[in-house]
Length: 170
Image 1 (cartoon, rainbow, N blue to C red):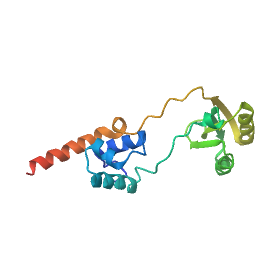
Image 2 (image 1 turned 45 degrees about the vertical axis):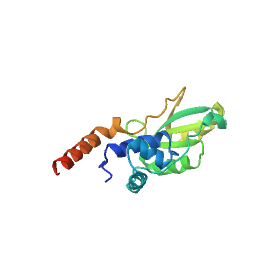
Image 3 (image 1 turned 90 degrees about the vertical axis):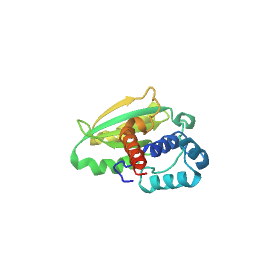
């Protein structure tokens, strides 16, 4: 397995299942995928070592923590301000994602705040670096898991080819 996708259909099933419930016992995961406990343990370990599975975590509801306002803030700046901007962003805890992008803007920031005045403070802190455009998020749809629909066709073909080669070698 390499970082360029040498995974098969069983690996994709594991990846999909862990994105839905990272706390699933390995024995249950193995049954769902059709692998024994040792085999599923080895597969998960290989996916981790290959950097495909980067970690496990909880999904947090920001509204339940009083962070009911989400905004996407775009910043257009000049190249000489890039490092300074990154430093400033790291100093603002309400900026939870930073994306360096192509096009007219240089950055897209995901911001979580309790109220509009908190967003205004953040916008004011970064506006000195260039043009700021802010969009309030009305609703977010759940993220789609990375799996068969995205990378799976190639893996499924590779898995089928491997099964066919195994049958012909007997």
